[in-house]
Image (cartoon, rainbow over all chains, first blue to last red):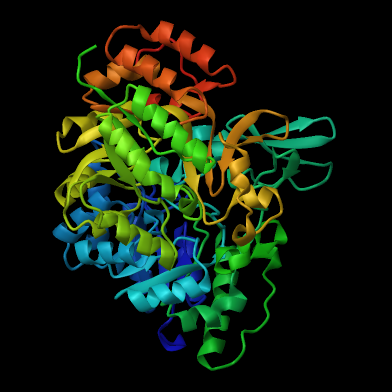
Length: 330
Length: 304
């Protein structure tokens, strides 16, 4: 894979963010419906049917593609909600749908053979055998890799599968294998797999205890902040816990993924598409992150080094990591 | 209770000392009232070589005792070595295998198999596809509520198995939290997960028990316990109940569940006896009611 063919896949949680991403140079924008069919099912976010149709028209007029994430696992007994989501995406001329559920992949490939299918990160396909299974069974054309693999592992994988690979390059960082994490529902009853939400705001509380602010999720303390310290959002796996007699960020610090420096290596590994996380973020965030990555990809295309960029203002807690792409992270 | 429900013992998820692992299964073979025993490393491929030498002896004893042996695959397959191990397991003849990753199911080429709880089967569409692929039995993910279980059991496409005892496997990662808690890298982990045969407790900052860590796996602190829901689940068509091995007396635990399944003991009495067997344990059943997984719903009839 060469830098020429690399696509920048950008998030949009609102029609305004979609326009910001397209205007900032996104090759693709990914979106979801305003319901439980997508894994960023947060209040006030996502697209109605008319908004999606308009958004696709706006993107297509400017040469960008729109990918529709329908990446939760259909509730037993109610497949029609998810089937209709796929049918409507096809009807609106979406460039692809992003799916996680085997049954839904089966439905989409049979009902809409012309529709391009991408495999969501929520499907947790981490090996060549798993990816080939989805390709051979349903004609999946691109897989989004779970954030568990190192760059050399990704290179070996790309050489071993006949379809495109997409990887996360920026934004929120799942430390668990995606699609295989029920931590959120253990504390709140809601998880990405079942309701399309991790650590949902409806279950968050900030409690003042003397000088301190305690952040809680489903009644469990996730972190404590001193006077004047900004209280971070209590995402379960980014909290401080006590284990082995020690208080620490046991799973992960409140940090964001940033692979700007690794982009040339990921291209050399054979990755086709770079995905920026953040459908829950505003259009200013989307605009500035997309612009930074657009400049980086274009610089690589010209054979120039990746320009240094100030992204600290948009990373979680102002900190970032290359995550699982570097072996030492494990 | 309407008869016929079977009891399974899930694979040991923890890193038990190899001799302890062997002795555990030898006693299960001789004494435990379970129909099926799942064997194999599901969590971390680095552990497998240690107990591998004991596997033939354990299989022989379990089979001689009339128990069905099912060989379980790894849940998160990443490295070349892990892929090779999966291929080797898929080629084993004479035993049913349990796929805990889709790559493994695909490698079976249509031979009958069981689907483990680490493959996401949440609905009838996925169940139907996997049944066509050769799935004969499906152990549902921890989150599946009774409403989902009832729909899937009613399809009649594969035997439905439900987790009913032990710490719940909640998440998998490439990162090892046991190693991280000791400031070790995963590559030089010194197998510290073996220090915690029931997982390493993870408490909140205000001292409330919350989760446990088992190497790369994160589990519930509370023990899942569906003694009170067995009958309703059986009526909904669940054919099989899974007990997860903990380091308590699993022969006695299995006997309790068996007694309730066969209607010889009522759930209330069994719960009292289970609390005596596991004095340290706190229990939960929230997932089956469609609620928070850590909750213990008490005195409410399970609607299925």
